[in-house]
Image 1 (tube, rainbow, N blue to C red):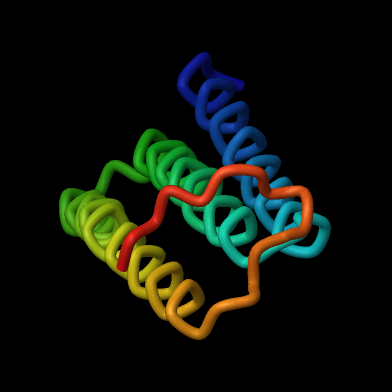
Image 2: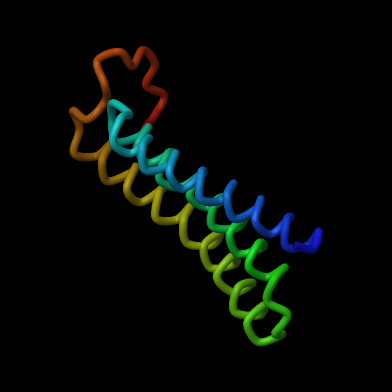
Length: 107
């Protein structure tokens, strides 16, 4: 196994672990805002690590271009989607966990 393949395998494992943690966070966290954070941050980083790991092994320029496009689109759409989910959840009210102490949102 070449050093590049080892690095790619490590990146794939780290990306998969972050995706797993994201899924666990979505199930275990108490309210929609914490779940929204778990759905976007680790999943986006996990996808980026997986795409970089695949790009290290696959040397086709067309495939690497597609992987870069996937990463860019993920980084552009995930924050917007999370913002819209959070805003809609706050507007319907009552979705904060009882342990939430500070509510600084003014919509």
